[in-house]
Length: 144
Length: 144
DNA sequence: TAAATATAGATAATAATTATCCGCTGAAAA
DNA sequence: TTTTCAGCGGATAATTATTATCTATATTTA
Image (tube, rainbow over the protein chains, first blue to last red):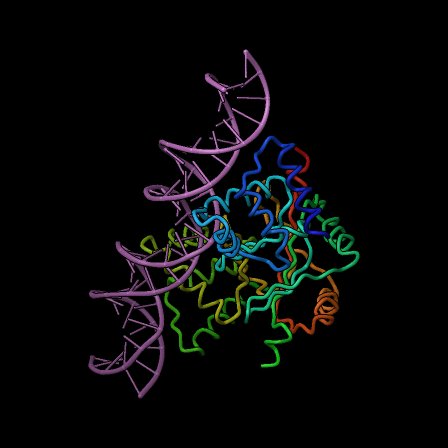
């Protein structure tokens, strides 16, 4: 997905919604779509501070909340380390999470929805979304 | 799994480890292995209070931590609602989580490990554990 | 029974996130 | 251009599950 195109898309949706696209908010969006990792709220905040040194951490959370309402950001909440976000691929997908260095890798798989349906069906469960995390060691950390 | 047998097993492991089996701790273990749902720390605490009215919530957390160290309890952490625990099936397995009523259903599936391996292999990722949550509406809540 | 130490209970601390408050800003209408 | 008005930014307080701390007590073992 092209970052610039996604930024334009998010900007348009936000404006159509009646929300405002302030410079700080735009910077937060840009940081999210440019980051191909899984930044925390503080990661984003630090990045914003370069251009807008007075930005509050609360402002970052507010825009993240807005994106959550729109459904255009994926939140990976961890009890302890707080949450990490994905503003590029907001749909659920498996993650490989290194418990050593904290790196989060995206993973792709076919037919996961089919598997999920087969789990939900016997319980007459109506699926809305899911979360699939795989914990272990990334290749770098495994070698040590 | 027979609750009584599991209680005996946990008691033995705890003693072999050099930990003590106090009445409060035994009551917490019993509450965990008897509960076929996914209680929170407070749920357990409330249950213990019937027999040991002075028990502190911290005591519940301490025993849960002990069980986590042993690997004999499964923790399902949620950012907001806190954690829910499974003292009967401490190994990872999929869960169907109703976002309406909060009910958590266990699910069983064959070959999930194989799927996980197929995801980990291309990244040379060494798998240790996983978490697979499916969110939606249970049959009761879906009908309303 | 006595000694050694893990534990219980009470309470304070932690930390990510959210709520609150107020002055400001930007867009739309007059 | 001016006015209006709601959304927003920034600072700070509040929230809340969990963890840490501390001391008296209870449990295990010899």
